[in-house]
Image (tube, rainbow, N blue to C red; front, side):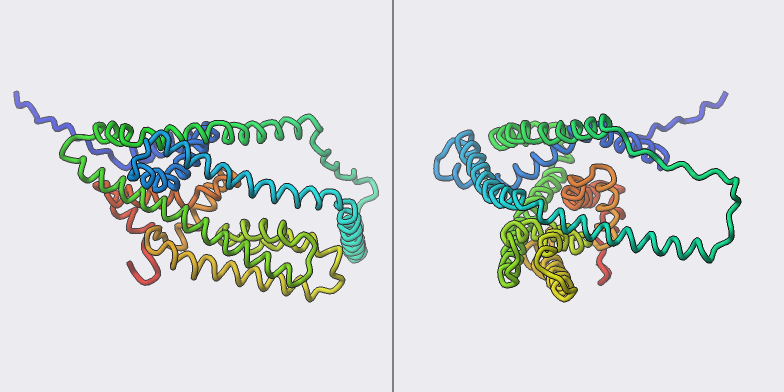
Amino acid sequence: MQIDEVRISAKSNPSQRVIALGIVFAFLYLASSLVMTLMLAALLAYFLDPIVTVLERIHFPRVLGALLALLLVTAVFAGLGYLVADRAEQFWSAWPRYSAILRHATTAFDKQIATVEKQVEAIGPIQDKGRIAPRTLEPPPIREWLLQGVGSLYSILLVATFVPFLVFFMLAGKQRIWKTTMELFPEDRRERVKSALDEVSITLRSFVAGNTLVAVILMLASWAFFLALHLDYPFLAGGVSGALNMVPYIGAVLAWIPPFLMGMAQWTKIGPYLGVAAVLTTLHIIGLNVLMPAIVGRRVHLNALSVTIALLFWGWLWGAIGLVLAIPITATVKVICDHAEGWEPIGHWLGASHKGE
């Protein structure tokens, strides 16, 4: 009897890869709060690691350096939060004036829509008198809105509570974590893994630092522009618009909302609105197409299609935080694919530019 040779291969076939990706995405959806917290902490740890390294070189213990870096960034965020909260409180105290104008504009718009509907019904076919009127959907009960709010509040509290501790532990135990991570791989592959992890570190650090600098520039530019327009609450509008302008593509439109809302109490003509939209769109184009490539360079090199797909997918999966994490996640996936055997074509596709990289 002839015995056929049986070969066992460790390589996965396409169907197994699809199943594995499905399991991964299901986990990312079900454990979204956990994964988002870990990723935000990792991004912040990569951003603060150079500060801890400098302190370590001047003979600061790494644990103390991690604590000082964390306290420094906490103080910065607390100061910015205080400034924004102070302006927001002033705006909230004047909200009745803005709400009245907004309600008047909404009422006028509803009347126009009702007039158009009546005109369409007048020229349309006569409906049967015995026809049952369609039922209108009732608004969701207050309990459902409260439950949704509690879920969102839980996610925010989870991030705010655990991120500082995670960042501190990541910074303080970097060498130990790095060593144990390398020991997970065979010795013949550790050099390649080390190269991939180094590139991921540089990519994420460049992304966070570049986005922070560009966001500050856009906020200051928006603030100066709103000051020149004599817009109410220019600091609040400039800060929010500058931050929203960092969202690729849709940020150019989202940045219009704060100045449009505050300008309703001051502007009666369409000219200022068109000027604000044009200037903020120009700032968006300059920020993402001139400043980001100049500051970040080719460290985070993704083509426009992959960025758009990443924003759509992660925004759908995780909402606003997904939009923040979409590009660093995709850039990390590209680096891993570039260094993983058999996944190089995916990494090349994610980074292929219109110039034919």
